Image (cartoon, rainbow, N blue to C red; front, top):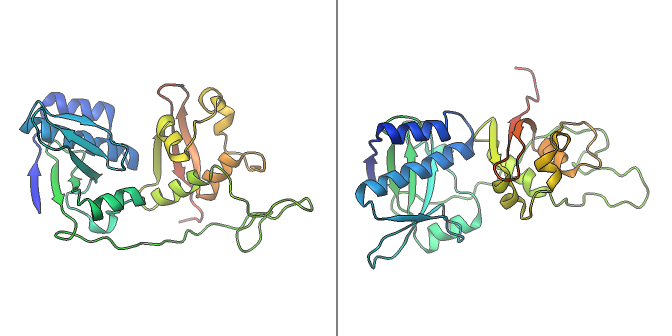
Length: 252
């Protein structure tokens, strides 16, 4: 395993703190980790270039010379160690690249410090991937049976039909083990869903209301069934975002 300290300049550290301030959002930590990896490569070779590949990797690094591009999986943590129990690979595309293409996994620790550290992990040498199926626990609401299916109030209506917002529920369930808050841009949310967010989501506050009656609001039902509520948002077609916060199911 290779380990590298990244000495950030005042300008670099200031940029990161302004754009990705200290917080627990997994999206924020992930994006900040990618920026730290970029600084790591730029300090080695200022001529390198970066892109966001479509093959499932987090980052692609290219050089002016004839070298092949390098694809990287990037995972960040505010801890000062690797935190193996929290280190997870999401999705088959990333898993296949790591296993089949042997792309490295860059674990960035101390992500909010002036000198973060990069641990370059190689599949088969430093780690292996273990399937981690998980079941989420959610309360049974009125109108649902004990199996979690919504009971129709009209004879002949479909039961347990998948919503097109099901991927939002799955996305939040996956993030629920990592953070109590999940902040995601409208662009990233469209990528999660697989389709463009409606204009009403970018223009109207009512779209993000935490209403109890979600019979005609499948998008709100998705985040509520994942155990989240909308905490805050910024409405904009170009730079909008929404922050979900995990609900407390039981008193502590």
